[in-house]
Image (cartoon, rainbow, N blue to C red):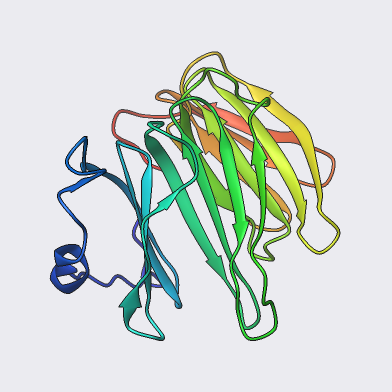
Length: 209
């Protein structure tokens, strides 16, 4: 839904895309781009062969392709940034969710977690950070939604069952207190703290959240 408060920026990213190779591993893995996310510090693009390409907007340079799982397509990804931290969440065709805290001036070492049980075998359709960066919501093609409370400092990652609609989740958005998501024909509003259903309704044709 477009409102008067919305701001949009359109860029073809030609300079960045020119640095993405056509293939990896001496031509054995062809690069087909599948997902993109942008934060104030990074641009990240995922691919069908599983490689990630990170562009550092502050240093104006790319890093080497990041392979977190072999041959598992990237189906969803989202960057998160505030003044001190940069997070990345990646969902894959196998159901694996990859979380990373990237290095910064205050954080010198990469911290990461691989969640490969919560959506096993189901394509990830959405990953979405809460505004405070303390929770990641993930959804898969079977309609299951999971909340992951994330604490990189103490290496704690708590998974909480949210919902199972039995049909694919089309879109998902959240605040620190609320979660709203929709399938092709209905929407639910959830209280985040207690995972309590507050409202639900039907979607009209082509209606968005």
